[in-house]
Image (cartoon, rainbow, N blue to C red; front, side, top):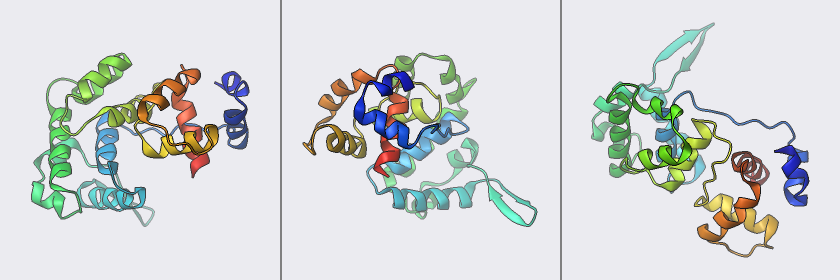
Length: 202
């Protein structure tokens, strides 16, 4: 990846600025899917509020050295949570239903969603996009955040489109198809490029 970045002056500058950046991962596929659903089509600041409410309402709690800590809710807990209760945490009706559906997939059958670790990228995308509420954008974030795959690329992400447009095309607005085509120059390390570009954007 670093060798590839050196051949791209724009990316090379970004990588030099944040050299050593590594990718934060979720503990489970379930967590990555739920977090992606919560973040769909809303500001990241609002998504953080909803995430915190969900975790502090349904997550296991432990006090350690006088400080309270929450873990991410278990699938069994969110599967049995009423839609109305999830809506009180500022989830829309559809997102509440999506979360419950993902929770069901996580507890249904041997291995549940965690069996995705054993599958190639294309098969993972095919299976998770079969879940209600999960599209290409969410599937790519699962590859990045849960499975640690090196060549995922959420080309439909508006913020990612914006930063590529700004850094490479003088602000010209680009659509998903063109961004996807442009990103091939970074394959097979597009996950890392995504992480560095988002860091530069922030």
